[in-house]
Amino acid sequence: MLKKSTLIRLMSLYPPYLGAGIRVTRVSHDFREIDVRMGLHWWNRNYVGTHFGGSLYSMIDPFLMLMFLENLGRDYVVWDKAATIRFKTPGRGTVFARFRLTEDDINAVRVAVERDGRAQPTFTVAITDSEGQLIAEAEKVLSVKKKAVA
Image 1 (cartoon, rainbow, N blue to C red):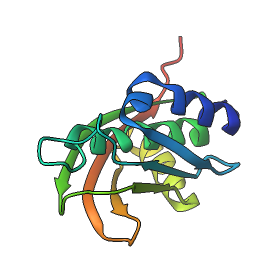
Image 2: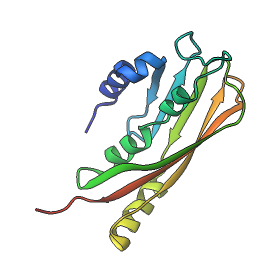
Image 3: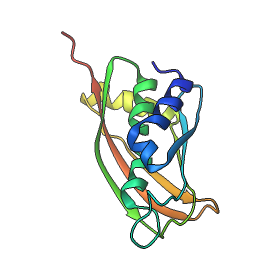
Image 4: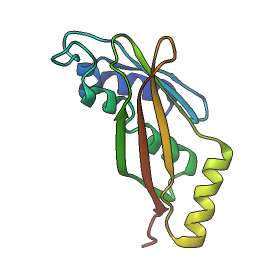
């Protein structure tokens, strides 16, 4: 399992995040809360001067997968299965994404895996500006199953 200080350092130095200006600003001790921000810079703005859509999507990938991996443990395989993003209004300043997992979220996945052999939980993540205005909304679908026993 990762230490949160290691995750923050590695994710902020990860080349796609470093290049896009994405910063992990907070990871809770139990990996159930992660906060991310991205400022608007000349290298991550599009032709009309707002946040590039690919950078906005990058902000929300792969945090839910990492959070489930850390909370379910080594007996589970977790993958991103699908994602969609809906742009609501142009992002012109610093934008934020907050990821939250509850005990109920984790338990529901465990129950579904035990019952069905696989779970495909879906989460919605909001990307907001500093005033709380919705810039984009992304839906992430994960695939979770138990590791095969050799």
